[in-house]
Image 1 (tube, protein in one colour):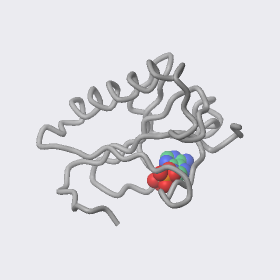
Image 2 (image 1 turned 90 degrees about the vertical axis):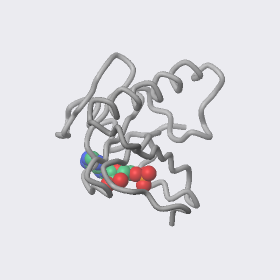
Image 3 (image 1 turned 180 degrees about the vertical axis):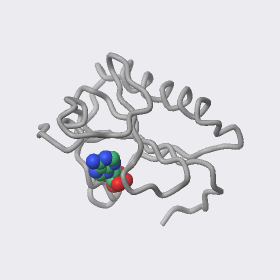
Image 4 (image 1 turned 90 degrees about the horizontal axis):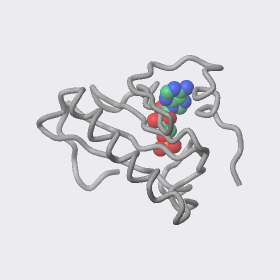
Length: 114
Ligand code: AMP
């Protein structure tokens, strides 16, 4: 089940966001609470609540989102590396129930994550 989230409002341009990339399938904008000098969220325009809800028919869309991440990382000059994060569900720390990939860059990323 999918419900209206803050990200659906951003897709519909009902609330503002600092958009860095858009195409027919995906939208990317800067995180409002950045955890790194570059912190961008890549989302599908189709409302999939979380990665564990994705279906086989979403395969091309999911691949597209990763390619968009790579393109944005290049555009943002993240040549020294970056991290992609997908939080899934409560234990994953997901707070917005619209699938999103975090791109974090321009600082060294610790491992393991918190
Ligand atoms: P997650 O915890 O993985 O669900 O990540 C949700 C992310 O969305 C957090 O990093 C928030 O800072 C970010 N966020 C929430 N509302 C907005 C907004 N209106 N514009 C940009 N980023 C947002």
